[in-house]
Image (tube, rainbow, N blue to C red; front, side, top):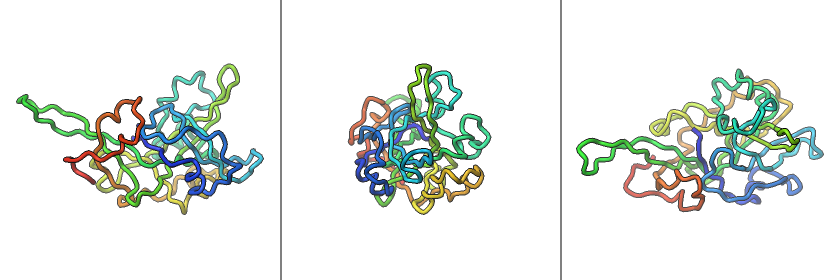
Amino acid sequence: MCGRYASASPVEDMAEAFGIRPQCILDPPPLPSYNVAPTDPVPGVLIRRTDRQADMRQLRTLHWGLLPPWATDARSAARRINARVETVAARPAFRGALAARRCLLPASGYFEWTSSDSTATAPVKATVKQPYFLHPADGGLLAFAGLYERWSDADGATRWTCTILTTAATGPLSRLHDRMPMVVSPTDWTAWLDPTHTDPAAALRLPVCPAGLLAAYPVHARVGNVRATGPELVAPLSGRPVF
């Protein structure tokens, strides 16, 4: 986790939720997307003190899959879609961004797959994967803890890239998977985004997402197809357990 998620709120709603001024909506990504996959463009909220809008929150397009400045090409991005909170401060690819380039990644929810037993006509049970959609129980917006980097290719073109921090799953969510994205509560957004807070250990001392914040229900297996992006992907599937 996390390998797929949904980011379906309009740009204007995201800007309002995160307190972003219209002039700070920079290069917004195409929305909505109900099936964000690795290397896709995604909305990110961040603060850059070197920009003209110093200390203001920005909304801009990031590509999911972090590329450190020393990466020789973009092919390694898909290997860095997630960073484990337990080891992120020690990983060369992430520790610089953890100290100074933290971001929030708005999401409507995320997908997780769990094994279930299928007993058709065959005498031997076959293990299949059932996708679930995990979302805020109150219907609100999630803010994943993220890190970002600006990476330049051999031609000098710049790509803004990001990764999602993951942590141990809590409560009933651990029945689906042992990992989950690190969710930052609105009361911690300012501290997480502040680029002047350069102590990585302090940055990670945020509360773990409470188990009761998220609910989960099963969805259709077509979410496994990266070409599928419509709202039907988050429609509940009947006849399966709900968390």
